[in-house]
Image 1 (cartoon, rainbow, N blue to C red):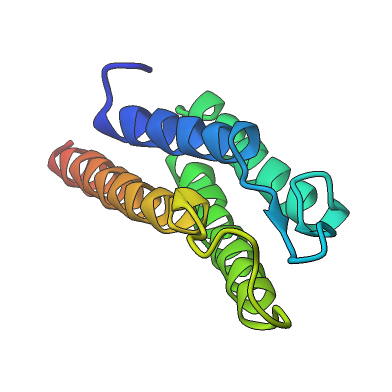
Image 2: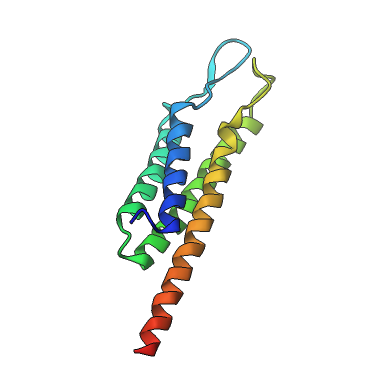
Length: 136
């Protein structure tokens, strides 16, 4: 349901992860060798898992508990992706051609923020449904 606020948060998170895949920076070393690229299986897999979990969570809007669990898994996958980014950038030998790493490293953090906001909205909806059930 598009009118629920958590759906908007999940759509924004999916768009952020899609943008991360499309505009992923290719980090080159001084000798021109590719240090980090989006075609690497680990990075591609983590970005794809995060994007897929966001889409599945959007489509399972009737099952709030499943949506909550999928968002938690998505947060974990984003933390792992962030850890891979930080590990790769910190273990570079020497200096890269471009010193700036780009916004690509920050996009998983932004996605995590929107996933946490979506989980708060799902929890609020679940509490509302439980309070209405108590009145019956």
